[in-house]
Length: 349
Ligand code: NDP
Image 1 (spheres, rainbow, N blue to C red):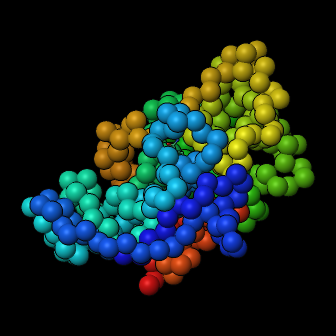
Image 2: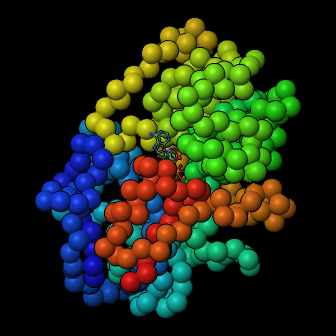
């Protein structure tokens, strides 16, 4: 099997070319199947910003929610595989499953550790990595279970055009009905085009954080302050949002992509005292703590899709046809905003 392994943990952006790359491509033999196991051929890979944290030099042992990926190991990644050989009692060749696959084209798994995908008619399987997979569930879990958002809350959502963010916007507006002052689901994204798309999904307004007038625009949009900030990015936007939350406001601390490619946060929180003075709560969460709720949430999201309340059009995913040799390159698009919705690698060789 072909595979990409971690060669050296990066300090900054992963190095994709040159003499000292972060990852190297190689091959390994495929072990013989044991009872209960299946052989999967990789069809799609999930691209997740957090993969960068799994290869970070800065995170101390025991302070991550999964074991780090160590040098010499296959780069970890979720994905969709097709069963090509099975010694499992129920899984059979042809079945499509999701599991932690890794950057490899063939891999052996315990059949009991994979989940069979059976998409409703009209839905692409790739949504089981995106809106109906862990990304969409992260939005659902962060809104309902962590920040406990209700229709009385106004909310700001960063990373709003991304995999988690686009679902969060739609749940906040169309399922929860956040409507304080009649216009208070506010998205933040990195281009004007993305912002207009987020407004199509239901945001009352979406602001481009790269615009020179961003802070002014956000101040205006949050006039009267907001109860909740769903934070996908951390850094400066989080710092500024601390000044725009109402008393007792909540931050659903979902991610911090603005700093994943650094060993530490150079921006720091200049407005930290607002947490004290305004009695704010910063609620960190990891979605795997809520996995027992996944199937119920997925059923609710499928129903929302059927009722036209969850749009799964082109904004839901960016599927990139990718040669095996370009797997790291497609993944790295996450950090330059190259995706709208879930970034998915479709292996073409
Ligand atoms: P996205 O689909 O949102 O992809 C990443 C996006 O982040 C890019 O498209 C880009 O969009 C934006 N981005 C990149 N660099 C920056 C930057 N410096 N500042 C601000 N935005 C930036 O990824 P996901 O939806 O999968 O993940 C979103 C966040 O949620 C991540 O932080 C991730 O780690 C986190 N997460 C947390 C989970 C949990 O359990 N807590 C589970 C899953 C995800 P743009 O063009 O708008 O800049």
